[in-house]
Image 1: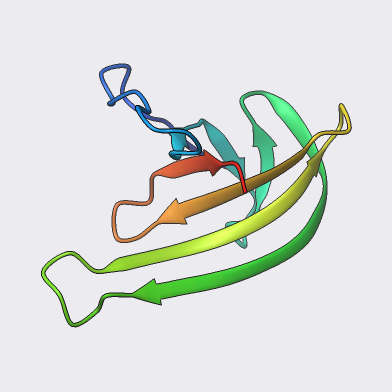
Image 2 (image 1 turned 90 degrees about the horizontal axis):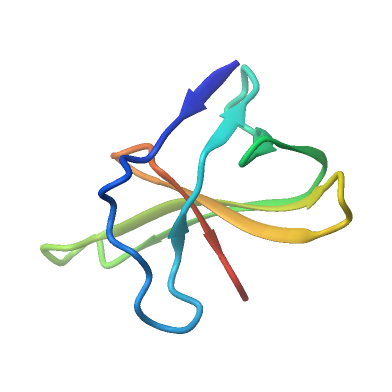
Length: 90
């Protein structure tokens, strides 16, 4: 398992629905198996977004819609090339 962590000094979200950094543990295929120490029981969907590749600030993200063991649905993404994980409300 791989654990991705975010520095405590990471910027706090300032806008409604702005992505927030989360700690994620992944399996060998880089799919999330734990989010903030809560088990993922199902990956409902995954997709990749690549946008703005022609600009100075392109966006490249691997999204996952997951169900946590406590019943919550959560949308996560891994930002590339940094590999940092974020949760985002739809």
